Image (tube, rainbow, N blue to C red):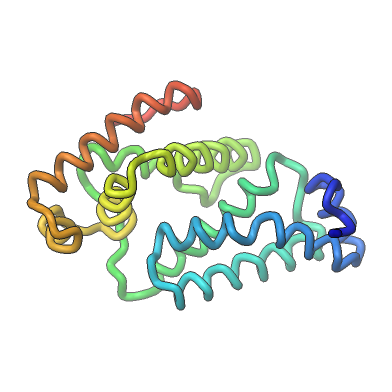
Length: 195
């Protein structure tokens, strides 16, 4: 049985901050699949996902051990924020041509710039991003795929149609239905999505 199974994240963080490695093992056990699956949803390349995953937890270790983690919200949201920022940095530095799509629907993604903000804004953005990812995970797989291809990989609708082996009209329809569904779901999360 795991020694710290019933402890809260904040207690585990404080224990690890003070040198208790078993506390970090419990945090890792709780969140490794969530972070890995989130990165896999974005990247779909296991080698890159593994690199970003390791970088995420390396940053977490450094920040906690150097006493730079403050109890400002949910640990899981903070963790996903770090993974997201590493993902964005990876594409900004590389020759991947990553940019957020330029059409009206992409406005929902531009609200999620999690960099250069104060703590209150960062907490709000982390929660918004977490909520959005939760909403996306409820969509049918084909809609999740077209959202990923369009907004995270900046593919054209022609490229999406080729990759998903469907017509351009079908790809457009899937995006439309996904965005409409996200708009409806956003009311449950008290979010406003500009679509």
